[in-house]
Structures are given as C-alpha cells and as structure tokens.
Amino acid sequence: DGGITQSPKYLFRKEGQNVTLSCEQNLNHDAMYWYRQDPGQGLRLIYYSQIVNDFQKGDIAEGYSVSREKKESFPLTVTSAQKNPTAFYLCASSHRGLRTEAFFGQGTRLTVV
Amino acid sequence: AQRVTQPEKLLSVFKGAPVELKCNYSYSGSPELFWYVQYSRQRLQLLLRHISRESIKGFTADLNKGETSFHLKKPFAQEEDSAMYYCALSGLQGGSEKLVFGKGTKLTVNP
Image (cartoon, rainbow over all chains, first blue to last red; front, top):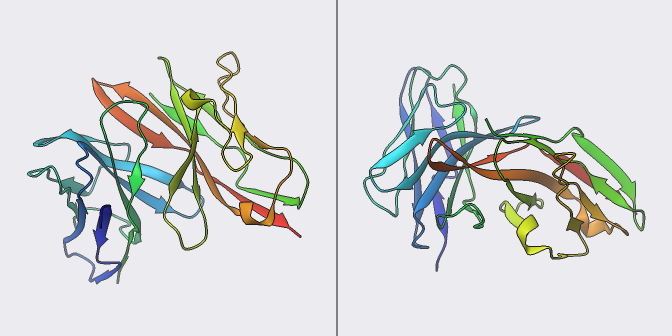
C-alpha cells in the first residue's frame, strides 16, 4: 500500500519533554515537508527537505528540529524550546519540481500537558 | 519571500449558487499555484494546479499575474463541495523549492 504515513495519530507529552513525530513515505519522493496546522492559521511551514542529508528552515522553525538520513523518512522533533507545541502536524512529500503535487499524511495531533 | 493570502476564513453559499474563493499571492519570480482541498475526515489533497488549466469537479482557477491572484470559481455549488480550501504557492527560495499555503477558507454549501 503506497503512501505517506504519520505516526502516531495522537500523542500526549508532558511540558518540558522533547517528542519526535514520525513521517514515512514509500512514493520514492525526494522532497518532504512538515507543516503545523492551527485553527485560523492555515498550514505553516516548519521544515522542508529536497534531498537526503539536506533540509531548510521554514517560516516557523524555532523550537523544532528534523533529520533526513533516509529518503523515505523525515522525523520531526518538537523540543522543549517550542513555546506552544500543542497543535496538529502534517507531513507531505512530492517529487522535485515546482509544479509537482504534494501528498499528505493523516496528521499527528500533539497535546502537551 | 513567498506569501499567500486568503482573505475569507468562512464562506457560505446556497446550493446552485456561484462560488468564488479568493487567493492573492506575493512572489518575486514566476509562481506555480495550486488549490488544495480537505474534506471532513480526509487528507488534504490537490484539487487543481494553474499549469494544467483544467476543470476539476466543476472548479476552475485562472492565474492573473497583473492582480497577483488565483481565485477559485465554480458556477453552481453543490453540498459535497463543503470543505476547507487552501491556496498554495511553490517557488524557489535560496535555491530550494518551497511550498507555502494560505490560511484557508472554509466553504459551506447549504441545501
């Protein structure tokens, strides 16, 4: 079954703890993206990667970190430095090229208590 | 910098009425623009892209470079069109391909 998978669907963490969200794709896509979706804010870009071992900060990268050691995987770590981490996180992937379609995961809802 | 603006958070129309979801963009280069849709309990998915000049589910969108707009239109709205709609722009920043989205418009089509 091809696609992009995020896990877990729901995640609860205590304040001050780092947490890592998983994103895996088997679509052979080079590009991968992480977005944060808040009500009334739309999708805001956290980090993106065009190729293995390379990634760039998006518009709201502070308090987040990523790695891209494999083409298929682009995990996002929400660190304790993120001031308001409770949100819905979406991962996407696409072929390279400005005109290509992005495919999205189902999302992970992170709640920090 | 790339920026996408969707001025309407909410839009409500009656079935059979025309609908227009507005999108304006800011980008110094030649933009690639898209509309994505998220139906209830479904993944965000591509609706259409400007380069294809196609009509999907009766929706069309025309790129107007002079007005830097990419409004989404449908002449006769259906109840199944009720969803969240996002305008997106793909462009180069620092040599990397960046995809940014607007804040979205929630469309409700009433019976």
